[in-house]
Amino acid sequence: MSALRQKTLNPLTYLALLSEGPLWAYTLLLPSLLLVLAVLIYPVGSGILLSFQEMRLTRPDLGTPFVGLQHYLELRSDPVFRTSLFNTAVWVVAGTASQFFVGLVAALALNRVLQRALPGMRLARVLVLLPWVMPSVVTGHMWALMLDSRLGVINDLLVRLGFLDAYKAFFADASTALPTVLIVSLWGSFPFFTLFFLAGLQGIPDELYEAGAVDGAGHWLQFRHITLPLLMPIIVATIVLRVIGMVNAPDLLIVLTGGGPGHATQVLSLYAFQKAYAEFDFGYAAAISVVMLLLLMAFTVVYVRISGVMKE
Image: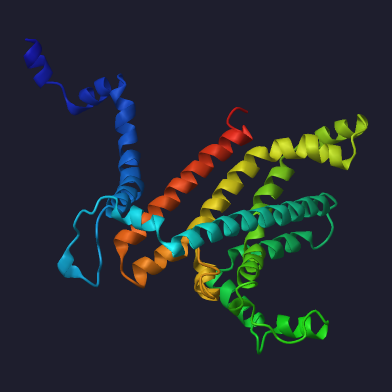
């Protein structure tokens, strides 16, 4: 009789019974899990697997044989890889630190003037954010023209002001190429920090600063004990995101220097790009990318733990 009754249950009844158990939650999560699997886990897993294979598009006759740790062993003796690793550290640390500092100063200044409701300040906020929304390729070509050793307006100004004796090819000199690209990156990326910090500053209640002023706290003590602690979650998130962006995006370096002169501006992401799309050695490029992935994972875990933001 019970078997006959189960056969007569309609689909809505089965759905109702399913929603009463824990299986229903997993059923609702299934589409999201499939999406994550398709756009994240599968590409990352394919890249890691490719790093253990030989894949040269210039030699299709070789196929894609499994070579184990061969690519990683070659990285240990690759001088360009060691140079790229050092340049990546300089590129990320100097770039993120400078962009963070300038972005924080700009956010504090904009927050102060916005509180006073001065005319034209909303337009100023838009203008500050303009470098961030500009495509990096456009930014690179614009600065390449302004810094050109023959026609560059910046070179002309520096010579007229007496800072230079003659026009200088900044991107052709190994001692100035990387610092110059860092300045270009600073101009284009500090609004990223400004945008998030300004949103965080506007979310801090004015009553906290008023209470601090009543207790005798000056601007520096208010900044240290009120502003910074409340901005800390935003600071941690933005620094992690910016470090990931700088490690993975060689677009400015491709436009301005191409890794030169020599290997003065060669970084890991650019080296992997050149190995994959100039030499068509995708296995070796995948190994470099896996090293980048491991370094970013280690940095994120260590930095988040040191900051203590998860405990809060």
